[in-house]
Image 1 (tube, rainbow, N blue to C red):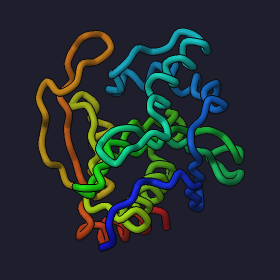
Image 2 (cartoon, rainbow, N blue to C red):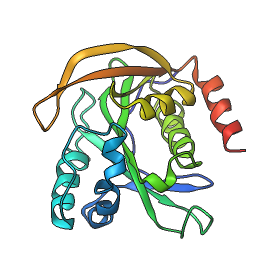
Image 3 (spheres, helix red, strand yellow):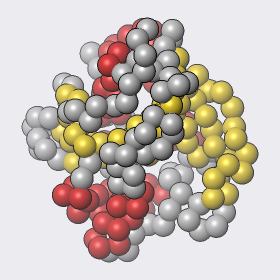
Image 4 (cartoon, helix red, strand yellow):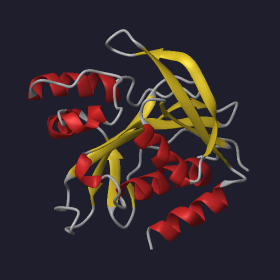
Length: 212
């Protein structure tokens, strides 16, 4: 396997979605996703539910654009993507912003990276959007960038997210107790999953099978 390299930020294009670098221009479109109460009822509880478009813009800036484009290979920075529908379909109109996902905590020495900060609008839960997005990002991590381990994690309270990660074929490693402070001052227990380079061919085949 070649030496690991940082994510390039290039567009990642699949059958259903296209991933481009998230920018300030995308933030206004985040409001419908971030303001949906069902998101928070399902265990997405790291931060407040925004009360206005301006509040959502600021929240998205803080949560998804912080350290954008500043990956240093030693764990700092992130590469955050806007996930948009590629073509008109029963999923919606081409170009619709359906969510976001990020690559962060990249360690070139350890050949490891974190795939996280993932959020989709409720309309796209249980559709090809998540498996397609994860296929694109995992392929980029393993095949383009040469990483050996991709971590995916979620809140212990978010059972829906845990089920989605497990269905990707990732291995559940365990729980980090009292791991992260939420915005409201409570502490999150974090469930950690991972995919290793040796497991990637099987995981990739499973994702491709799900996408037909």
